[in-house]
Image 1: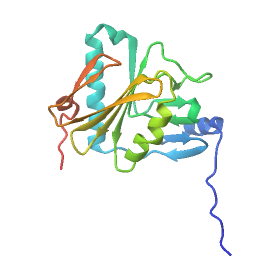
Image 2: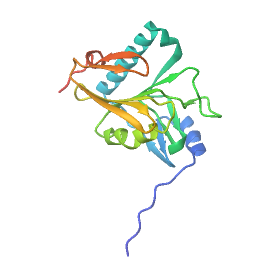
Image 3: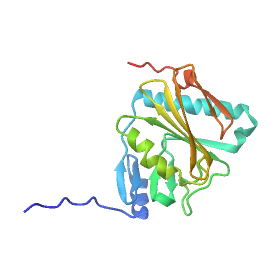
Image 4: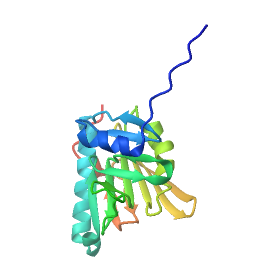
Length: 196
């Protein structure tokens, strides 16, 4: 007689949020399951810092700078349609910031999301997570950034259920982030990154 595996314990969104506020480490919430998040590598963190600096500098110098807020990995995002809470590596939201009803710590209106890929998360970032992000009406652009080589995948919303994919390789490449009217040079994005 074999014993059936025990299904993972599930939680309501309210239970997750109550636990997350008290937690010492961050967790994602995926349709009832609480998933611990692992720490990033030095390259991962350097790329995130570089991207935030580039975006802040570009937006500050342009007229649109007053219209956006940029957040790093500690900002929780609510995706109601997929019953998901997540912490994107970088997220840009227009002002005024839209918060989840009844919350002061959970945003709901991303325009641009960037994820720095790792071996353990790249399949999820490309598939399930991107599918969840696409359900958010304000979401316009997605960057998947490789931390092992100068390589970025960009998805731009063209219409309902229509996304344009572009791929950029090498430090000489330049990406136009159309949702923000910002030019992103890979040489700047990967500054101080040494590939082995």
